[in-house]
Image (spheres, one colour):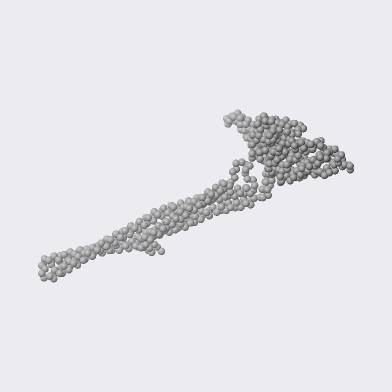
Length: 605
């Protein structure tokens, strides 16, 4: 099968076919280019997606700790690698397929143009030969007609009796001339015809088959190139399949690495406060008041008033038992002092507690002369100081367990820094010894400033470590002693109530809690942030502001330098004292900002 023999007369058709082949090649190249753009956009979008969901690791505290988070970030890393492989596919297609196609299409156009020009030249030459042969043929035909006319004229004159001999002779000469010219044109025509037949045979059996063969080879090479590009198109992606498989396997391994038990333990480690659960409330037997007699030295009216106040106190305590997940109990009415109680005996010899008349009148006076209730935010959430105020250096704003972890973490970091400085000191000392032994290598005195700086850093780090270890020992000591105090209070049926400062520190010292009647509080829940209308606590002293305090955090009280405030609750070791203005506004102020004067036996402002 050859185009030269089978398609010898289809030059125009082959021209159109070869042009279609180049157009198809360029069309496929355009397809590959659009596929490359899709791969590039896909990779770009994947990278943007990974960047969007990757954590902003500005500090070590924000690094993911949960296995589910770590697995997700590992999946993001694998997806980023997957996006890189899509870019590799695009680059391979651009270099191996698209670039090769564009270069080959350019060469193919040049080759096709050359072959078609050769074919057109051969056709033009054959047309020229045919015209020459045709011209000689027409000339020969014209001369033959003229000779024929001359012969007819000669015969007519020769047969005419009236014609002269000169006319006959002239007609004969004209016949001989035309006959001679006809013979010459005949020979010319025969030569041109023979030449044309030879060129025509050469054209259709040698030249055109050769040109068509080259066009056929060119078209077959184009087809082969397309086949290679098809294969390269697939190979570009097949090469990255093993790496993509590894990326997908990495995602599966990341999914398998999720450990729910470990995450749960991390939640415990992260949020464990270290506080002990509240102890049981003691049973208070109010039925003993039923057996009191008139001879107990109390007034019946005061008994009734005492019963009413006891009933309110009992209801308040009953409500307070569900403080952990319910509404916070309101502060109880001021408890009676030990001097206001006395023991009475029944005829059968049993003893019970009774109220004297003084505490009853005291409570009534407090109700009549007390200030209007003002809303006070008594339960600041633990940890708000971290978000809304500066964190303390000793982490006293954190719960004990979290404080212990933070201090331990800081001590570890300081120890690492101390070890680094110690190694640097040892290296400097060795270098100094080398310089002293070999002065030409350097001046030992040039190392003295660096040694001094290193020693200062070591001393500073040791002081920091000692200070943080002291804080850690304090936290561990409080944590260890809390259980003993709680156990002892449970035995004596006294529950020690914890307090919260604005920074969330916890105080449970029994000596500080049992101060006097004005200071008794109920429990306040961390999980409830409602405002309550409570009776103002009585003042236990006054203070004068040494420095101004802005009081931006909720629960704090702003004050000016020299301002005098009432003290309604002492500092429990957390650095904050509860104070009140004359207009009734309450809040916490820093203990170090005020000069405190406590008043003993104070009954209130």
